[in-house]
Image 1 (cartoon, rainbow, N blue to C red):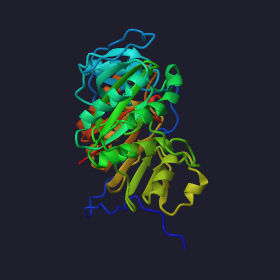
Image 2: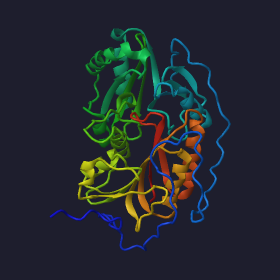
Image 3: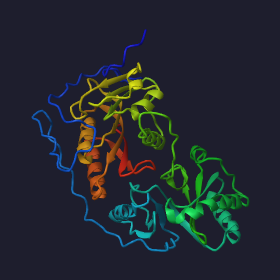
Length: 400
């Protein structure tokens, strides 16, 4: 006999006792799926919705100069950042707002002082300790000596990489040769993976190839690195399923270092066709999938899934849940306000969400969304453009 699907009142193993039931607000919002067309009117307010706080205005816009060609050499003592190709102006502006005095070096590369907080549009960053000019044969020993000195008595994992843009394509084939040459003369104990370096309190040795005769070298603590993947290119394994969106979820959970446990209750807002719900079910979680649209038939037969066919804006759980997930193609500030409501009403303990960004004004949207989430009670939300994100960012946060 098939077990009963999970109730939205169920709590996982992190339950802290019985809680007061939460009433569902009346009224119905439009579908949470599908980006509305520019001419579509905004969702009409209803008298049962609580007043929404107005997000603060972003700082004045900062426009960088065009990308230099060929790429400029970075400078020792400053940070070197890499980002998704085409997002250099957004990373530049973000670092300028953080008083980082940025400088565009070339496709995907931006230089700055270390900012006060991690930039959302950076895939990876490290402080440059040396800039090498010339062929590999004359520099391998120099790189090894620098890394040995930085590692001290601790372990090290070496990462040799080229930026992720067409200009640097020919350099990717040279990375392995550089890695072997440097590893062959290192005295420091090396680790086989960046995850092992993080676990053992080691460092990541960074060698970024910018041209056949130009490279930047530095180190960063594995525990504090923006990404454990070389150059921030964290490719996730893809499994057959309803959508490729599951790759974003897997990368987000890997970055968070935490995931739903067996029996924990997850709400998936804007769930259709079910890519995120499928991965959560595979982890043993109990899932409440909220979307007016239909889910993949194989998911509907799963005993730990319940499909609530209504708008994410109208849905309210009867009791708090462990996790809130959200990947809706909707206006980002309206989604941020919805996520903020979940924090104010203490409906979930942890958050993983995706915000779709407009073609322009990406930084102002991210700035205002962060303020909405922080003011509502999501503690130190991390907003990042992950490797599998496109014109979007991923939000990771906990409420306590």
